Image (tube, rainbow, N blue to C red):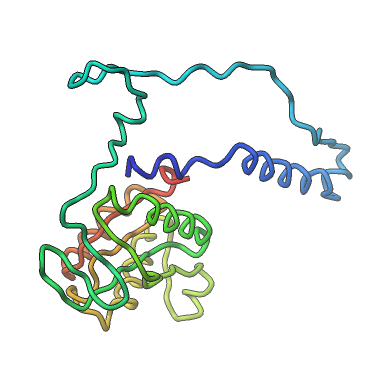
Length: 213
């Protein structure tokens, strides 16, 4: 996941725009105005200086290199896992396969950003992702209740994921899905969901929401 780091960081102008949009909504809120609360809509300006990037000495050549060259060497795998809508090819073994991405509906935007980042670093990750994944979306609690399902508390969150994963992959064999990526909101959910995926025979990779924002 280290290779995704540079793509997880929002552009400063994008972050500024999001903050100003949020502040504007609060400033225009009738309840805030009735309380006499006013919000400054201009960000504070601070003069600063950008420091030079750190560099290290390459032990092989003795020449200085930028640290990012050391962290991300751009090494490509000799036998990448090729995943598309038709087949998955690994070490010469070909079978019908796709990939799946599991996420909560509230995290749809983040899920799309992660998939876009995957495509940028897929060579380093040793995977070639071509077509769109099978999206398995975890609906909100109201939708689950409408479907006749009841979950008691936050502690049951992993059960929602397991139910939707089992439903989404019910017609698929492990050889049909090369890998299942799961974006979870809580770290404690991962072991139980992964255990279930392991039992079903599906390879999986988990990401914690707070680490991917």
